[in-house]
Amino acid sequence: MAADAFAPKVCMGAVMHERTRPVHNRFTYPLATLRIPLSRLEGLRVPLLGVDRPGVFSLRSRDHGARNGAPLLPWIRDLLDRQGLVEADGEVVLQTMPRMFGFLFNPVSFWFCHDRQGGLRAVLAEVSNTFGEHHNYLVAHPDHRPITAGDELKACKVFHVSPFFPVRGEYRFRFSRQGGVVSTAIDYWEGGHCQLATRMSGREQPLTGRALLGWLARLPLMSFGVVLRIHWQALRLALRRVPFFRKPHPPTEELSS
Image (cartoon, rainbow, N blue to C red; front, side, top):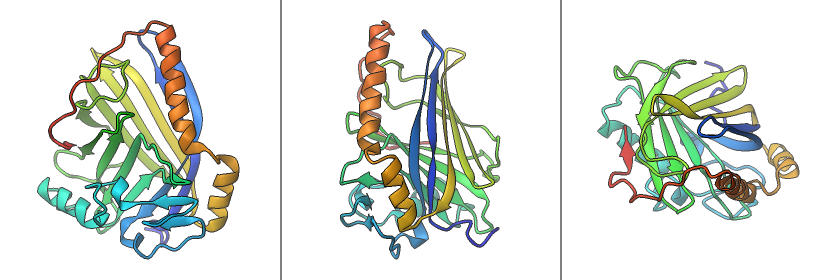
């Protein structure tokens, strides 16, 4: 394992969504995320980035985990222990969109949970919808063996995200980190078909003030743009008369595994 394998990173890349049914709709937008090892979060000092304090970019504990401002690392450790994932006792890397100028809408954050040798053992997908609701999907192999590139991990869909898909079916996840490129694939299957394919990828670079300045120059309104693009694509689907599903009550449990 390289010495900087768990160093704080910026990932500059893109996200792609491709709907296959009942109409085809594909779009790609630029995307940037942070990858922060939680063991280093408390002492992280980077120009333009505030950790639990204001900044051009900011990471706030209350935006994740228990969402009460409590430290994140003890929260995920307790969650993993309760799920019997004792093998995931190494570094936890949070990949997420930070607040920009205090504003945040983050559709999904990923918590990559490793063992002490650096092997990936579990991933928590922390999902948010535009109604201010949140749900966590925890995926791992049934025998808790390391997750490698190309492995497919499944989770039943229980949380409303888009009004153009029902709350049924399953997600199929694949994760890869090779050659400085971090990739996540999420396929939504329902009725025996892949209804929606999502691909997120980005090339890592060290988290520095210069990297954040480059992010700001390229994507100064990224957080606002995420919300605008969600509503723009929803309008396009509505105009094409794609079936609409009313929002059900959120799941009573905050975690699915």
